[in-house]
Amino acid sequence: MTSSPPPPLTALSDLDAQLASAGFAVLDAGSLAVLTHTATAALQRWPSLWNDLPPDTHLRDGGRYRRRRHGCFVVDGAQMLAAPHRAHWQPVAYNALHGGIERWFEPLPAALAADPAWHSLIVGLAATASRLGGARPWYVEAHTFRIDCTDGIGRPTPEGAHRDGVDLVAVVLVARHNVKGGETRVFDARGPQGVRFTLSEPWSVLLLDDACVVHESTPIQPVDPAQPAYRDTLVLTFRRAGFQGPAE
Image (cartoon, rainbow, N blue to C red):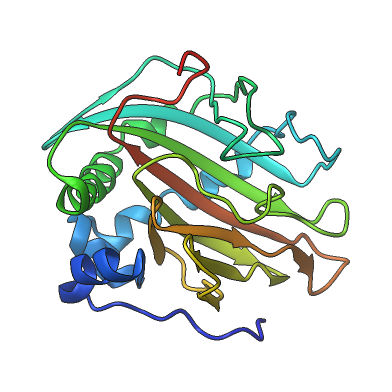
């Protein structure tokens, strides 16, 4: 149940031009499957893994609404290697709420990281990053998120409108269950121009040129307060200059 506009979908043939000109693009599930040579049916093996996400213990607003896991990979062309497990770190300049601290999260499930469809998805999106920013190795951080309504409201982006300090961001919607809200907002980093819409189709994806836009998602609330209510996403970030860390 949403009242915001539907996503402004991009034809796959226009993806590179749309990213280069507007700094963002939205693909439906079928286009994501074609782009990454991944069968949508293969992705449907994954949603149950979101039922086993540990609580995010680093929320500085005192909330209990976010669960997540985290993993790191390096992609070079068609090759992808898992990187040693590491803390997620962002500078305060990009995340005023949670920046400047090492945040350790439980690793991704082995069943996910070993799935051939996982390899295809990340390598395919890395190829998009290469077309946008030039071919090179990409340092990829993967976050599986569940935002729920344990406290009556859940905040997908408690830090507000932000950039991530990377080159390309992919926000994949996995599921919406019994929620209203969760509107995506994307703004030109150089001015007030922006768009708003709500991702509702599982395995649709928002792609962001992180240098050009800032983004946020509005809070969610339950439609039926007596029932579980949550929004599941997979967020992948692609960075050219290594993983972010406090030594930078």
